[in-house]
Amino acid sequence: PGHAVAALAAYPSLSCTGGPFQVRSEWGVADDIFCAGNDSVFTFVEDVLKEVMALFPSTYIHIGGDEAPKVRWKACQKCQARIRAEGLKDEMELQSYFVKRVERFLKANGRRLIGWDEILEGGLAPEATVMSWRGVQGGIDAAKENHDVIMTPTDFCYFDYYQADPATEPETIGGMVTLKTVYGFEPTPPVLSPAQARHILGAQGNLWTEYIDSPSKAEYMAYPRAIALAEVNWSPKETRNWEDFLDRLDSQYKRLEYMGVNFSKGSLQVDITTMRDSANHRNLVVISSETKGHDIFYTLDGSEPGPGSTKYTEPFEVKSTSTVRACLVKDNEVKGQVN
Ligand code: ACM
Ligand code: ZN
Image 1: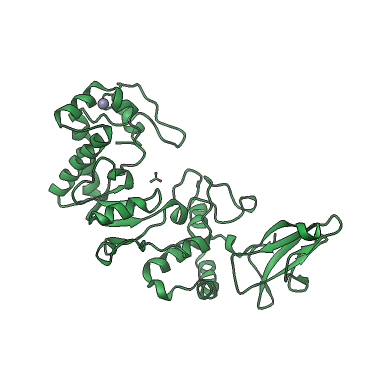
Image 2: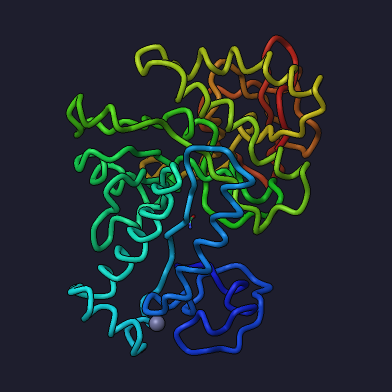
């Protein structure tokens, strides 16, 4: 029922208040959502889904279901009348009523419903598949109820988040999901029994485009993280090995270059920070990288570092004003970005 303002701008009578509404020009969550007490809403939604089904032959249809604030429903006579007529407890159960009704329609047309984990609120539709985005708990809860699940938690799977230091990356919506973070994701939570675990179908990367204005930037955000997620999905847990993956990634980078795919080298950069050595009353420069199997070389005079510069072995003290620059080196070649 949420994320519907564009539809409400065209059909304000499908809202709780009657509008009027402007199509949003900014992203975000809106209080105005479809009125769940108005049968014309379901006629409209079914008409839209008929067109969607005519276009897409897929078994699964994703109906959203996320980010639907309940303020309008709480204040709406029609919504409150629906709650009473259907014997529902509250607005959460009204959302569940909404999604179940849409599921019945999809099912009658031979399709299956997927929705974001908010569709758990107020009770899951009988055969719904859940996409768990606000963490993995929604997915765990759904799997325990024997529902299929696709894991796509923000902390591991949001490819619209930064993948390296924001100071060196194009602007994004925020957050931080590095390549290593993605690679370390385990879609099947250990709390599930083997039977429940079979309901975890896999993981999906989400690439929302609020801050993505070109195909080239979309590629940049998706790669190489999509490669890491593919390996997470397609290989057994026991065979996954970050350092081995990084070795193999070198040839993937060449392949992406050959194919003209724009991609981030954010994983191939160093992080330069300082650390207080209290015991010895010193400030130390610490250079690190999430990438293993590379050496770090640095300069202190602002010049471009490379294989001929000083090799970093441990945190070091800088006694006078310096400009620390560093990079990763492998096989005598600079890899990734110089910081
Ligand atoms: C979501 O990111 N709102 C599913
Ligand atoms: Zn209403």
